[in-house]
Image (cartoon, rainbow, N blue to C red; front, top):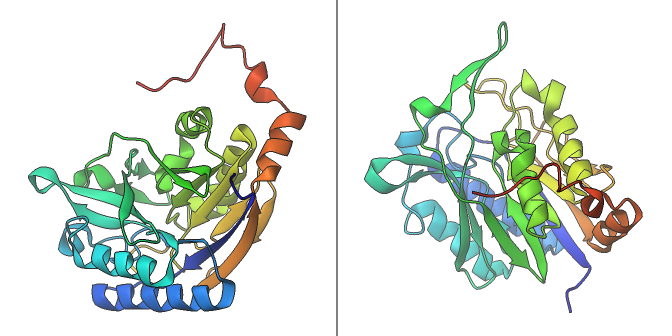
Length: 277
């Protein structure tokens, strides 16, 4: 029988141009989180090993690359699940993907998710980014199971697409985890809003893990990593700096919310639907 309570730790980490130092910092913070919080699952930020602007320079194969091997060892040493933020993955035909790896307590790679929706935006007076100039998009949905609970994986811009979250809900997910690095234009406007919307729409937990803010970086992350419950209530949130926090995830709340407001069974599937292709 699935345990209803899971302790989850979120690691909002500082990044730099030094890949080895970034990975070392993550390993140190994983160890600190285990000692302080004894989590079952730990989440890391988007591009935690490479910063947000150095895709090909720091790209590596999965699971044979340096970062993957270090996360595998950390998961095994500490007997925890690790949602390993994202790293630039060197894939087929030398394509680069923004990829989240997930490691089990036995050190095995249990899943990897390639970012499905690439961040191509141009906000007048704000920010212009075109990830598709450097990255390739993934085409697969990714779910993992931790102690009987199904969890969907998305990455950053993926959170803006309600259809993706709905399909995870259709698959029985009780949580979606998004390693993400919103910026100082979209972060203040939409970061919390989108998390609470996805949680409310689909009556599940939403977890985001951002890099800490570095105002000297080429890309300045917003920070404010967050855990939102199925009522769309913010359970825990970081500020902008490097921070570790943890929460007890009570999955019985998912069932309670879905029973009390049964929108899933009340959808007019005779008129509309969201289906995977």
